[in-house]
Length: 311
Image (cartoon, rainbow, N blue to C red; front, side):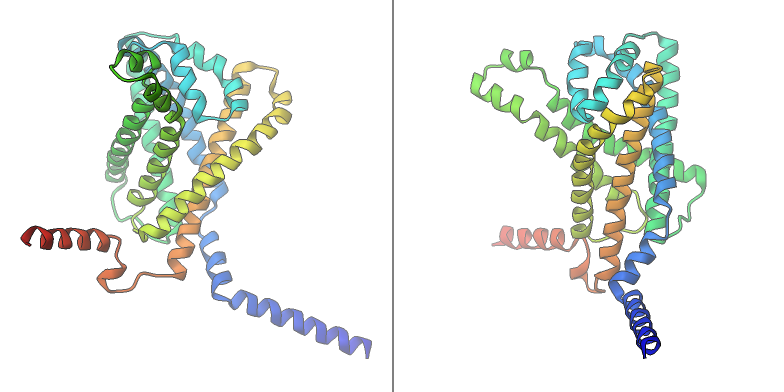
């Protein structure tokens, strides 16, 4: 009797797992998450991202005198982009790099930065296409130009927002505006940086992959990405306080290791957001009618605007 009951329970458990695997939600999650090895993909993104950061800092250091900005001012706003624990480690090496100048160094830095950033965008695009289960039909060199094109557009939009956020208080005080407005603008700088981060992530999720999911799913995936980055910033600060003790043997190397880990976690959070977007797109596919398209709301808006003008 005991053996019979045991066999029956095994059959019940087997049936439970069989029904669980055949469930549409579970099957979709397993299918989407198994399309791309996000650990390897995030590591590739982090490698090229780290390779592009230091020459980009050299470019920034060369341009600072022409922009009328000091190194401390640049570091102040760079501090908002990374957790406090990470910034503590990388501040000395960033300050050292910003002090470098020279036309030869600038030229080499521009070439390395553009190549590395194009590789970053290409790696993200390949990972996103893999998650959406689509294959790029373009030639590799043409795909690189596409990546560079989208990179310039996205960085230009983010750059405008960050320039607005980086306007110094001395410039604001020189304008004919009240001190209360200056204080409100200074308080809103962090919000502008977060807004720039959201817009950049949204554009990456919208423009880079071949498949274009619905805007609502892209928005949800982007919000999850930003939320994960914020949570990771807190968790990573705790991790750095423990792991950094093992990296104190060399300041520059420890800074590079900490920064590489941070970029890796950001890339991982970004790909997780893309996976969630793909899962939602698989579970709730767009209908064939025009109402399911991303641009229906815009078409409806302009159509109604035209009717109002005629009236």
